[in-house]
Image 1 (cartoon, rainbow, N blue to C red):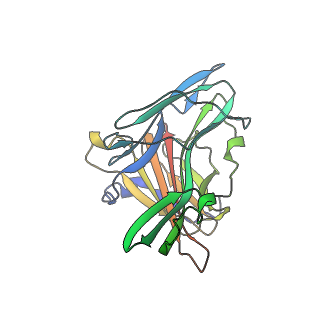
Image 2 (tube, one colour; image 1 turned 45 degrees about the horizontal axis):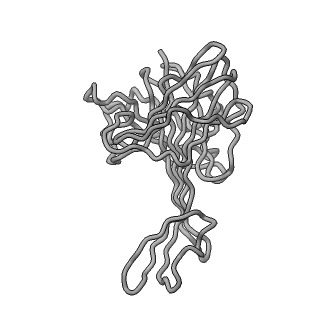
Image 3 (spheres, rainbow, N blue to C red; image 1 turned 180 degrees about the horizontal axis):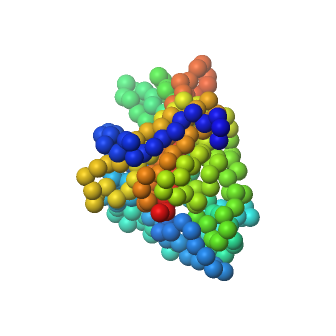
Length: 266
């Protein structure tokens, strides 16, 4: 992409210190590219200090959706929530690319009641009616979290890349199941349907427990919300970005975050 101004070569930044961000969320597949008339893929989802290493808590999958290449919904199978991770399987029966996403939107608020500070969380449609009568000093933020990954059966397709216009969303320029070591890959981030310009994207390679080097760095999106990564090593990578906006008047502030797991092959 000619106008991409943010180019990240991770090999030049492997010695960068690990960012101080604990309990990172992730949703990772057992494989990203498969072949045949049908296939099964397993998924792990958790919150941990090291990405893809379940060591803190399982992820709740209340917002889980699996979208098939034709746009239909696929039901997760064999779902289970353990102490440190949640797991489920997906049966792929259509050729093309699937999107697996855990999306959580809502409103978080703090308020004062009888001299005590309290908190409230609920759906956007429940706010502010869901607050108790007599609540004062109300401060509320609209939240949008998207944690996703992609898998492909046989030939890659792009039908699942359609965005919803809510929160932070990824628009691949390079297909996320066609990533190769040493080759640049470009993606765009949108925030509520508009380019998410000048925000940091954290990129970290999994497998930290087997090495001393964190292999983590950041890249900024350009004016179009685009960023480019050149992958130095094969493996599963964790991408993360977030955007906060302040509220004005009756308009709520917002806190949107995006996480993706992508596999890079040799």
